[in-house]
Every structure is written in C-alpha cells, then in structure tokens.
Amino acid sequence: MSSTFDQVATIIAETCDIPRDTITPESHAIDDLGIDSLDFLDIAFAIDKAFGIKLPLEKWTQEVNDGKATTEQYFVLKNLSARIDELVAAKGAGA
Amino acid sequence: MQLEYFQLIDRILDLNIDEKTIQVEAQVPQHNTIFEGHFPGYPIMPGVLLIESMAQTSGWLLLALMKFERMPFLAAVKEAKMRGFVSPGELLTVQASILHEGSGYAMTEAKVSVGGKLRSNATITFSHVPFPNQDLRGHMDAVARRIGLPQAVVP
Image (cartoon, rainbow over all chains, first blue to last red):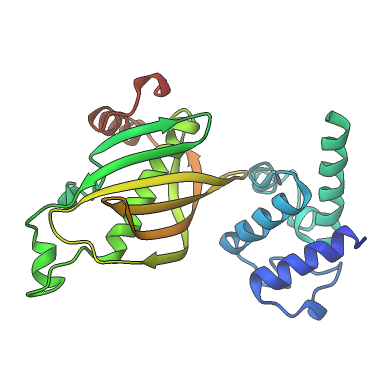
C-alpha cells in the first residue's frame, strides 16, 4: 500500500501535469510547484475522493490569513500528508 | 429568459434537497439582438450561454443546499460539450446534480435538453463565500421567488 505522500504526489502530478519525480515531501505546493488556488481545488477534490475526507481548506486559509498558521503547515507536502492522515484517523474514530 | 439581465432561468420545475438535484426550464427568446450576430441568417444560441444556463441552474441548487447563507461563484468549467444547436424559441430543460461538496467549493454535473434530447453538458466548479452584502442577498431572494424556488428552502 502506497504512503499518503505517494498518493498525494501522484494526484498532484496527474491533476496539474507536473512531473512526478519533481515532487518531494519537502515541496511546497504553492511556492515550489506553482499550484494556484483554483488548481488546488482539483487536487482537494481528488484527495477528498481518494481518502474519503473533506480537506478543511476554508479553515486553513482563514488561519493563514489571521496569522495563526503558516502556509508551510498545510501546503508543504509532508505536512499536507500528515494533515490527511489526521483527518482519516479522526474519521475512523468517529465512525 | 431575460438575456439583457443575464437571467437565463425562467422556472424551477423540481428541487430535491435529499437527492441534491434540480430541474429548471428556460425559454430561449424568439427574437434577440444576440441572434443578429450569432449568426446572420443562421441564428443559434451561443454555447457560452448554454454553459451559463447550466451554471445558473447549478447555482440555484447550491444556494438552496447552503440555505442561502453563501453565494456560489463560477470558478471552472470542464468537459463542456455542445452536442447540438439550440434555436430561437426552443424550450430548454436544464438539470444539475452535485458531484462533490468541498470546503468552500462545490462541483456539479449539469445538462441541457430540448424535447428530451441532450444538447449540452458540463462539469462545473464553484467557489462559495458568505453573501458579500445584503443587496445581493435581497436580489437573489427576489429572483428565487420569481422563478418558483420553494420558499421552504429560503430562510
């Protein structure tokens, strides 16, 4: 079974036509991969479907805008993968 | 259809909150200046307006599902296909359903039919935000009443 990061990287590569081998756990989706907010909706859609979750994009954006979080916490891919794992675990715990 | 006001939907025929589907009708006017240019001697409804009719139909569905607390705005159109011409005077049936409800965005699948025959379809993405002001909210309420949106879904 592939890791969460591998699944996310594959989604990003296929959704945004970015070479898979340029995507690393340290890649920042916005700053390094150049993914804009509209393209990120397609990624969020694919992640939501693949993991059966709902990425809280609005909450994250609000936290960044309010200075309570940095974009790195949510959009560096190893961190994004960790957030996804948390959401999957929370969903499993609530089921 | 009031093309001069960009209001393409005339009447909501069915709104199913549980199934998250909507069906509306839209009467293409027999005469409009748009047809003088699109095209001279061969008037057809512009494809972008068919897409807009699907976007507006999807928008009413989303407004109802979000209890008129948020306003959807068109963000992306995918797989839009114009499968047949639409002529002046034809009655469109437009249907939409929810493909995905995300955080701050939603995706719908919509189609336009005439007489039961598919003329256009698309997958549409919307971003949605709290209503930016009361003027817009009031306007949407008024249009909702005019086109027969069930008032039970308008708080």
